Length: 253
Ligand SMILES: Nc1ncnc2c1ncn2[C@@H]1O[C@H](COP(=O)(O)OP(=O)(O)OP(=O)(O)O)[C@@H](O)[C@H]1O
Ligand SMILES: [Mg+2]
Image (cartoon, rainbow, N blue to C red; front, side):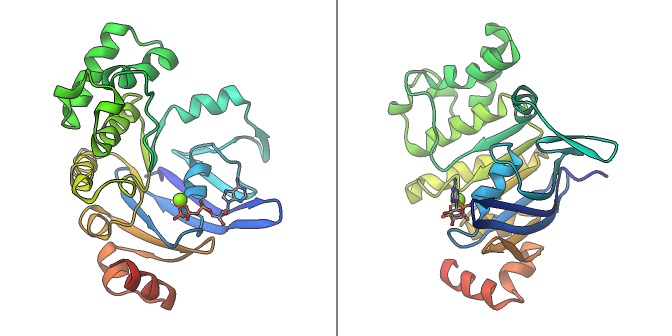
């Protein structure tokens, strides 16, 4: 089976600063892939590369069998045009630490917007689907609320529904719960757990080790732009082999 995400020697530099120093990994379809590591290790940068928000400096990165940012013809690579990149980005849902909902739109309108604007879905169909998605994230009764009338956890669940509205084949989560009050984290993780059960392929940058252990199929520990250690959550989290992993886990567990 083809990998959903395959990274081979992925490098990313900003000027002279090397942020990713050769990332090799594979995410299988339906896998829940958790990415952990200290601040500045390159986790967000890697997600941004997968989502076509950054171009890799060297190496190869592909999503669902297609190179990110390039088209291959024979043994030559051609950079994709912005319009082609935008088309590919549609298939990937991204949820950030900050929810970035449109403040002047209700929860319902936030979820309806992209399918209508980007995919040309009719208003009635977009509405029907958005209501189902809001129900799925436990917010059927909040459809008419504006973001300012929702808790952080509720806003984050709207953000998840909004990403799902584009029917992505891959969901990227960048510390989706780290800006939330502790009592709001559980509801968001429950929604993510439900997505995992439904077979969504997910890459989750998280400090929630409980989630990684219970829901993750694999855990990768990144430090300073490289993958230090990876494997089943049980192994990596309870029996880490590398000093750097041990030291990181002793701080977050
Ligand atoms: N646009 C940029 N220009 C220059 N340096 C950058 C840029 N974006 C990120 N970096 C640098 O890349 C490194 C990795 O950043 P990144 O945001 O990927 O880390 P992270 O692992 O997500 O950290 P955190 O856990 O704090 O979110 C940092 O040292 C950061 O300063
Ligand atoms: Mg980050």
